[in-house]
Length: 90
Image 1 (cartoon, rainbow, N blue to C red):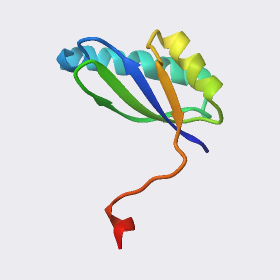
Image 2: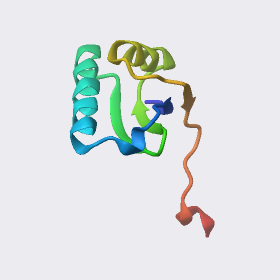
Image 3: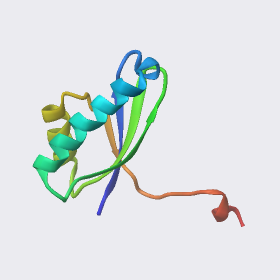
Image 4: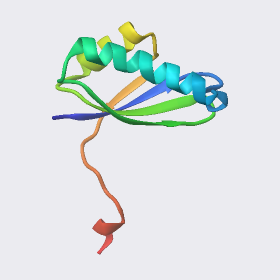
């Protein structure tokens, strides 16, 4: 299944409270449940003004549909081509 990195421009994301993050997670999961098992949210990284989400989905269009229905921006969607880590170094 293809894996995607979704870059979301969300001003003040890093200042969101635990309750804000829980609410956003619940909204995302609600839409994911509607869309079916083909799309899965793996995890997200929250920074100052952006959220970077890792998803698996059969195609980019399903990621875009999730963004529309959840109300979260998907400013850039990039399909992961390979993964590297320190174990590849030697």
